Image: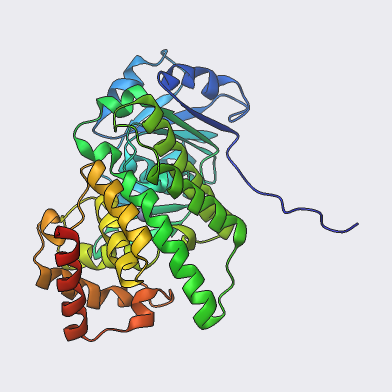
Length: 350
Ligand SMILES: [Zn+2]
């Protein structure tokens, strides 16, 4: 019999709505995810702690994470294996979810992602980004078996960083454009389904006129970030959601640690790369979306001088030598990069 369609691994449950946490006890105890009901919950320093305290007693053992790095993820993985847990839920922001995803992968058990912020597209992705002794790395992991986003909790999350994932979702447009550029220049194969999912997710955020705190906007953003994660799972790599935009981010993180969040730098990198690609229409759309949501568009808005940003742009291709993007296509000299950055700043600042 011919192969009629490809089979996709996808989460069993995706639950995005105000009050979604209320369904968590049933999800953890209905025996679909953990047959024997032996479940651990990993919580970070933020809202996860309070949420775990509100869950009915005895449904899961709560493990508090001390930091969000690679070592704590491996240690948690060992704990999960030693405790013979059947599943683990990570409740918290991006860091808690990244740590729990890698730990679940190490322990070989399913992971439930309970997101209390929408800071980046790791909610449902097969990638954990974790700090280690010499910077930070991205690790391939099994994606979450269930994804819960409680919009009330996202609204309660501190600061504008809780919706910085706007920039990460938007950056898919730049990443997919880079993928297509690579197809034309190097013959790299583009996975059409992964590209469609990543691009549609970005367009939903790009054209959603609502405000950051509304149910309508947060639902679109949460679903876009989930679809981005699934696009990566379909592609088997971060290609549909990470291009020159993320290369610039990695360079900024290496050169000037602590500059800004993942989502903020992804949005800035995507706008700059779209400008380099000379796609004026898309650059205008991305620029107005970032501006509407108070996201940074200029190096100065993340505390970098034009010179510092130029150094990062020149260092960016080295952060991902196997990935062909607009930066590899242009292969700018430092002088050319400085000129393009100067023109970009002038164009965006108006
Ligand atoms: Zn990203």
